[in-house]
Amino acid sequence: MRKLHALLIVLALAVAARANAAVISIADARSQPPGTIVTVEGSVTVPSGDFASSTFDQGFAIEDATGGIYVSTIDNLNLNFHRRVRVTGAVGDNGVGLLILTPASSAGVTKLPGASAIDPLPFATGDIGEATEGLLVEVTGTITQPIINDLPYGYQVFIDDGSGEMQIFICASTGINPFMIPFMKKGARITVVGSSGQFLEHYEALPRHRGDIHRAHP
Image (cartoon, rainbow, N blue to C red; front, side):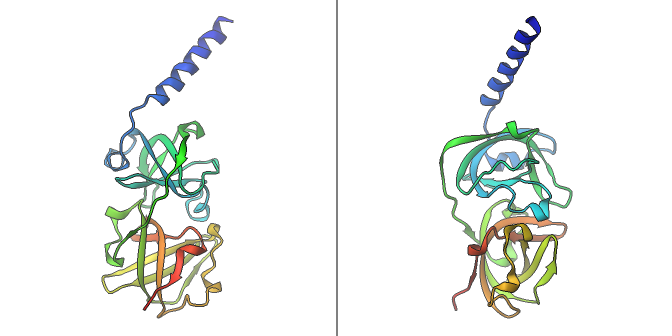
């Protein structure tokens, strides 16, 4: 009985500590040294598991007024667009250049009341880079080369608006097949909304669903 009582006290203290953890901005979290444990709050911009074919996890992305970040989780927490959450985890690199936040377990993610939509920020293709990583962005450009089939991971599409070529990576797990979109061909001008990320030397935008890809207006 004493052991059980002690265990309950420890668990209560752990829950209280997590609830009272100092919340910092996502921009501040992104500036911390690798391995630093931080607590942030934000709205979901990429639903749980959308990028699984590329990230090999069931994570999601969040954004606040200062920045955005990808949260890597093993379990699918069924978080959808706009859901507000608090996340406690370690800042680190995913091994291919993307800064991520990794909770120790699913208990490190808490659903908060309410929802808040995040609008994409417009950028030139040549401006997608380290400074935009984690943000929901909107880019418009001309497809510069044939679409590359990179299954089972996804598809590579390169666009340029004259400021510099960038990659649009379409994860297979989103269900988007660019070969089934009639206007997705070399020379076409498109507008894409996506999460700004990085894979090795490529900075990219990753659309989340078919509605994130449009034929650009002349």
